[in-house]
Image 1 (cartoon, rainbow, N blue to C red):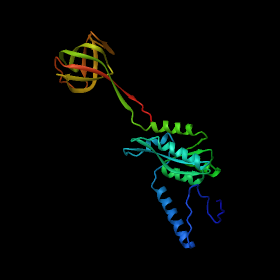
Image 2: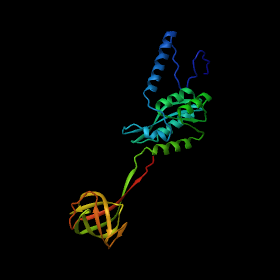
Image 3: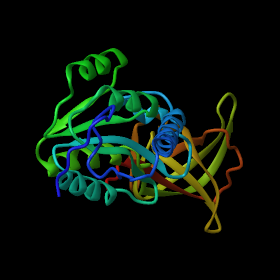
Image 4: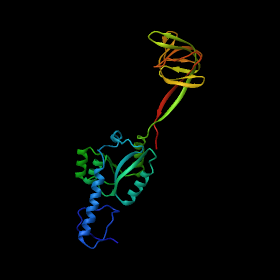
Length: 266
């Protein structure tokens, strides 16, 4: 049933617990203990940041945490938001909900966000004038939403940016070393025939001997006759020199490949 409670120093959040005790001294003891826990929680946090800028300040743990502070209009919205956000993470990145409450955004919310490197998100609520000014001075980002799926989509994109990219390798060609030349100032040059695909100057290269990879690296030069070439296609001969590697023998195989970083998403 609804009740009226007098004498509070501030408005409680929906979901806060009321305890009935026999004496005022016991009540103050409980209140002081809760306030001490809140101060300790805020003191353990780092520096401030925005949704984009916080990436560079993440800790080096195996699981990257994405700190957030939510304020919503009603408890039902808050529960739906936190449930959706909790499901976004994986074993590499997860949302860290530092605080979730009902009501407008206040100075204490901005203070917690500043101390914990968090972004403040308001759902169908706004910051009071004092909180807005404090956020401006402290460079704290406040984002407002009125549709849950838009909020979740934005967080999903931002958290995806914390995932390490997938390394995709594509083999583009192969060659056989026909003869090896030792040229002053250039070192060992492998005279090759491209027997499949294409060799590109900027591609990576592997050296195989008896089908065993003995070196992986880059080319310092790719030549067609005496001229530098950007690429040489199947059926043509070329000269290849490897970066910081000289142990090339006739009969070795070269494998040319390109590496691409593919951004992952949750």
